[in-house]
Length: 215
Image (cartoon, rainbow, N blue to C red; front, side, top):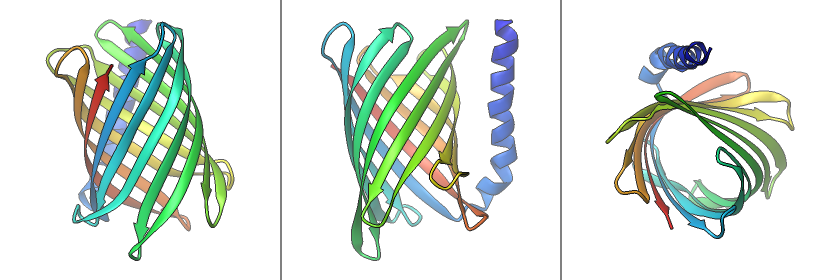
């Protein structure tokens, strides 16, 4: 049964990547996203997660988005985490920085099946901006191999805007996780991000990096 589930998950993510391939080739823009994470173990069950995103847009020529985020997580069991994050984001538009704040309950489940590591994450974001507020549900799945020194993975994150009642963003990625030490993890990935606006979908190619430090 486990082998059937693993096979279906891998086939589904790989099929999504193949279906997205023609769109990837004609994406409207290319970005560079870079993330730093720090995780502090406060006690046996509590962990503090803080970090920052730096994003370069317009074919990676302009520094256009930055974020700061922080939040506590509670370890329910070895494979279940519950948390709450606060995120401040600023996006550059027409030479002005537009502020946005997000308040997000998070549920995270990790499970290992043989050589495969599955991660499921649900975020329920309340986004507040100067012009409007909205609620967004973000459903994330990641399937990676338990391998050393490099662990390849596929992932997909689907966004549903609860305020307007429709799917309006998807992020499909393939990457490599590389443990540098027991407490430092580096990752590189390629992502295809698609966004819906006025019933039309546009795409963005993203080359990303991530560095996670456990303290």
